[in-house]
Length: 217
Figure 1 (cartoon, rainbow, N blue to C red):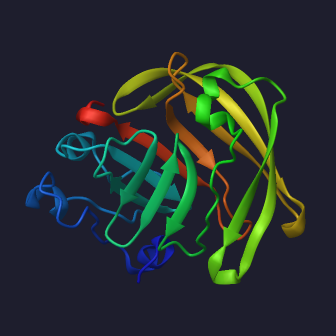
Figure 2 (figure 1 turned 90 degrees about the vertical axis):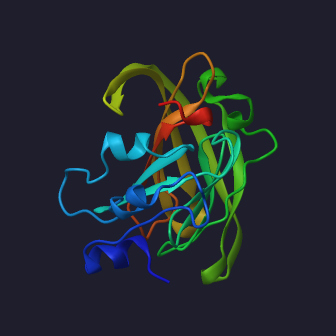
């Protein structure tokens, strides 16, 4: 199984949702997964050609386009050719096919459940995180939230006015702490872009919800 980082070494590969009729052959042939340098190889036209929710993912210098067979909101599976990400209200809760895979379900009182647009400044919660391949299970992850301001974030050729929420996480057992950032729709709490640290061994995963339910940008 090739990972994001392994594909960078190979140069160029392609991804898509196997068996998904909404992906045309032409679209699959032009979806570049790996990219060297700062310029994205995934165009607006390629995203718009897919009649399904689309999530763009960046891990270090590697780039991927993932497609959801469902609505793309709430609890959503996102598939590439060899990777799967599971997000829950925009937060990464499970991965498969990455250099380090994680299982980190939301807590019962998680602010993502009710929408980050409503999170209180200073709110704190604790989740339990597993790294299955490393035989590490039930590791506490403590999170604290800070509300930011509405910022203009550009993607899909448009400026989106989104509320930024910072999430400060710490995992004492791993001596790991980081700041995650989420940009959410102020009226709905839908996470449209995020920078999420999920392992001390990897760079942050940058996710952009390029298309939502119904294929709307």
